[in-house]
Amino acid sequence: MAKFIYIRQASDNAACISVDRITDISVDTNGKLNIDFAGNDNGDCGAVFSINTSDANEKSILLYVTRAIANNRQSVLTIADAVTGEFIHKNITAVDSITPSS
Image (cartoon, rainbow, N blue to C red; front, side, top):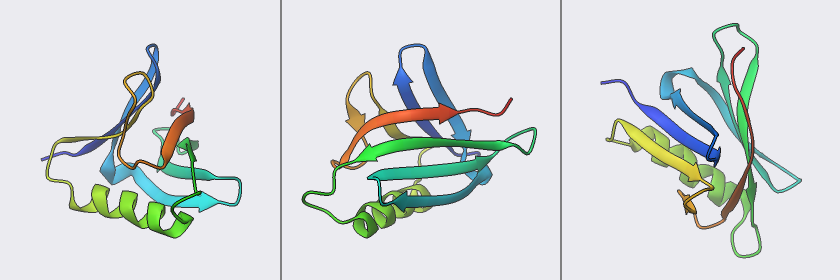
């Protein structure tokens, strides 16, 4: 069964990304969680999320999201829906960008 992650930044900006296309998941010092994936054109693609680290460290958020994706049994796992306010982790606060394959 194919598995996807779902990300929505706005009512007209969303993506379902095949889990098989994820190349890496990382956090940076600017309070951002990054999920990078291979595009059809082999270009840079990804999604960037704001995270709140006031009561959790970057490592715990990174490991939580990575494990949730790896252990997911559903066909579609919502990582973030900024329209409905549904986020996979309580410290993910926004979807900053979605960069699709061209």
